[in-house]
Structure formats: C-alpha cells, structure tokens
Image (cartoon, rainbow, N blue to C red; front, side, top):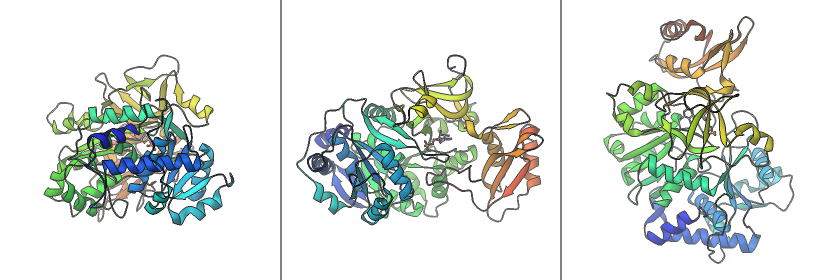
Length: 499
Ligand code: AMP
C-alpha cells in the first residue's frame, strides 16, 4: 500500500471537491491535484529515473507546490525528505548528503546557495519548487508505484535543539496508521472541513495534511506563507470549521490577536497543539477564550503526530474530579500505540515514573544510515523517547522534561517542568525556562529564566515565595534571570543549550 493512494482514492470519489487554496483562492480540486502529482511523478521517473528507494528532498516555505512534490515522489515510489525551511543552506546540504538525495526541490532564489554548499558532486539535481517550473517537468501521468508498506515514505529530520539532526525513517504504514489514528482520536473529517497549513509542511502541517486529504477536506495555505494570527482569523471567517496545528507559542499569539472575535471562535473547530510543553496556565487561558478546542498532543518526529493526547471532551468536563490533573498531563496513549515506562533492568512497566517508551505501527523504523543512534533509541521494538514522565494507573501520562534536562541537585532530582508550572502561576510571568547550572556545593542547581509580562513588577523574592509555598525547598531556583525573550527554534521549542 502506497500512501499516494490516499490522494488517488479521494480524487476518484470526490474529484470535484476543492483540495487546495492559496489564501482564499482555490488552486486545485482533488482531481486536478491527483493529476498533477501523477504527471510530475511520471516526469520524475522518465526524465530522472526516480524510482522506489530514492529520496526527494524539499526545502522551502509552505505552498501548494510543496504538496504536489510530496505526492509526486510517492507516486514515483520514492521517499520524501522535507527539511525545515529555517535551516541554513549548509545544514540542508549536509542533510541531502546524509540521506543521499539525488533530487532536491528548493525555491529558485536558493538554488545557487545550496549548490555552492553541496560537496557530493554534480549528480545531485537541484530544481525549482515554483509552479511553472514544476509544470515543465510533468510527464505522462503514472499510476502510483508498487511498493511495500514497510518502505520508507518520509525521512523526518528531527529539529535538533541539541546535536546533529538525525533522519527518522517513517514508512508508508506509519503514515497510514497516523492518518487513521487521527480520525479515530481527534475528529471525523469531511469536505466541509478546512485544514490550515500554518506550521511548516516539513513537520506537523505536512503530516496532518494526510487525514485531511484522505477525507477530502479543504487544505488552506496562507498567502504569504507563515503564521500571522490576524490573517488566520480572517481566513477562519471565510472558511469555517477550521483545524490547524499550532505550537504553544503560536497558540499564545493567536489567543492574544485583536482580530479574534466570536465568529472566529465559532469557525475554529480544533487547534492541535504540541511540539513543546503546553502548561496548565496556557490550557486554562485557551479554554476560557476558545472553549474546549485545543487538543494537546505529545509526539516526536520518531513517532509523529503523536504518542499521547488529551481528548478535547475532557477539557469540557470541568467538574471532573481529575480535571486539574488531566490539564497538567498529555493525556492517554493514541489509538494503536502502547506507552510504558522504560526500566533498564526489567520489562517496561505500564505505570510508574521514568523514561517514556512507545511502540506500535506509527513508530519509525530507525534512523537513516545511523545504526548506532537506532540501537540507542530502539530496544525490543520500543522507541525510547528521551522524555521523562509518569504514567498513572488510569493511563494518564504527565511529562516531566527531557532526560537530558533533568537537574540533579545534591543527589535529588529536579524536573524543570514541575518548577516551570509553579512559576507560571505568577500573573507577572509570561514565559519561563528552568535549566541546570553547575554548583560547587550541590553539583547542579536550578536557574530560572523569566520573561515578565509587560509592566509587571515581578521580583525574584516573589517567585521564591511562590516556590516555597508549592514545591520542596531543594527544587526552587537558586537564581532568577530576567530576560526580554527566550531563544526558540522555528517549531517554538526553547533552545535550552543557548541558555
Ligand atoms: P520533535 O521531534 O522535534 O518534534 O521534538 C519532540 C519533543 O518535543 C518530544 O520528545 C518532547 O520532549 C517535546 N514535546 C512534543 N510535544 C509535546 C507536548 N505536547 N508537551 C510537552 N512536550 C512535548
């Protein structure tokens, strides 16, 4: 089963339904979209000999053409390698070389810069991602290639807030399981629904596009590409029944938009949020402004969109005795996945505290060309996530932070997330990151970086008092640093290494 059949099937059953919009402007129906992908896939095969097992790299801002190339590569039997648009051309070149991509699509204006960084020679084709240029590559429409469901469909280079990025191999099966689990756990989807491509198509928007194409929904790519909360509000008024993925930072900006009114709220169906912690205070604010529309999903490139999630219905159930505990969690295992706490010297445990492990068809097959990293991340069929958490008897997963972020002070564990949750309760604190720093007496100490809200007069003494009345004394930060902003990558993740 080739994941390209998701588009081919929809084109057959709902060919006249609109598939893609650029801003408000209709671009293709499903029939047209499938034809273009099949013709480009045919062109890939005939002109360049692209075939099963090849890798086609994409590096560019969100666009309808991005989707065309993704499906065309699958039609031809190749895997796609969508690369974060914010990366430097040197980083893109090193990814292209790492995965051996022979065909790369990038905006015309970037071709020269990328070519200059490639050291693997002239046999790599760097082609423009613009519509007219793609049109010139069209050949005879091809049927989607015969492949094995375990073939790699997508190599997902992890965003790499630390170290060199690694390419997680996601099979056609993984993408199919992800799309079906979406329909099982989030919302049913129809042609009346719209999916807004706000996050990068190289990441969440590209992955979550699949269940929406599967059910013939409208894919809307803002023009210009990127995230402008006021424009999102305007387009929501136009389309209605809107779902999108936002990082917690994007969600905060959306909620603060002056353009957010009752029509926009009514037209918003679901905001899928994740990629970084969504704190209790964020959830409460979102709930009070939007109602129960935010779906907090915990995942990673190695088990995409996602591992666990907090069902929207639980947000509506405010009188439930576990309401607060649920808000602080990342919910329960997604359909088709098992979660466990990994223990070094024993079988994984269904409950308890430790490193979170996951297994099931969504999970990656391993890292591309990196046996060592694969062996470190995958044991006995389980993916070790590198995230610390607690799984309760009722299956609720609460994250504590990354294993590498754990602070050990005087032999006791301090989970940054726990301290951050407390600091965010102060009305003057807008954002916070707690990290470990060397300490001659305790080995490590907690240091809090605080972004204060405008005009607030929050002090270190206030925050210390807040911590003392909520958490153990040893956990409180020994130092507070007030900063105007926190460094983040374009997925909204705090770059703790820089702090
Ligand atoms: P990436 O592979 O770049 O998407 O990063 C995945 C990592 O982001 C996970 O391993 C978690 O540490 C973190 N993460 C993702 N989603 C959430 C979430 N909903 N809440 C807290 N942390 C998250």
